[in-house]
Image 1 (cartoon, one colour):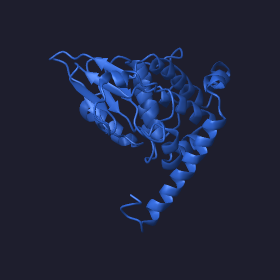
Image 2 (cartoon, one colour; image 1 turned 120 degrees about the vertical axis):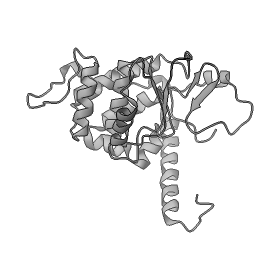
Image 3 (cartoon, helix red, strand yellow; image 1 turned 90 degrees about the vertical axis):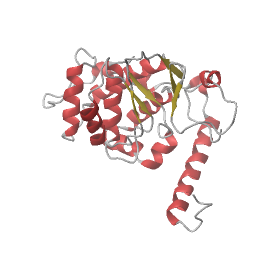
Length: 258
């Protein structure tokens, strides 16, 4: 954008912000050791977190997501109320375990009588997400969904969107699919608002856990060996195969190029 519109002040400002963050991340990678990288989960003691008596919102039944919980959660969020931090942490820890077991390329089979709904960017637009479910039905084993990345940033309800999506992933792990977009990354979250939103609604520690979870999101999904779904379209290079996708070590922040 800066090259095409060199006099665009907003584009220059965004470029400067991006350049600063890229340099900061490069420095952090240089001094960090992957061997000593500890998960946020290791520092959490969810069991000791208490839910105050005055909290009247949704709670996980026995620590697990149920359909009743999801319906209550969506109504709670619709009224612009905040989920208790203990419940949010429970969802994040559990969904990380689920996602970490998935391959980078998820391969699914649909019968001729079956369907799947593919949804694009939601970008923190919670009421748009509710409208999708109202028009097309709630996720279920007979009504599967694929959300193709960019769940957060830009909109004001990114926390609500992503925790709802993660909740359905826990409820229907084989029929509700989430793929990683370019906004499920630290750099984008710093620039476009998700990091600030999480810190305002919860804590910096929770944002760090979101970052870990995002790194385990699969990158692509192939249906019946014929339909390939991924965020951002096809590759800039020719000759990329499905095996190349399968071999990608996705548990990381994306490189500066490539």
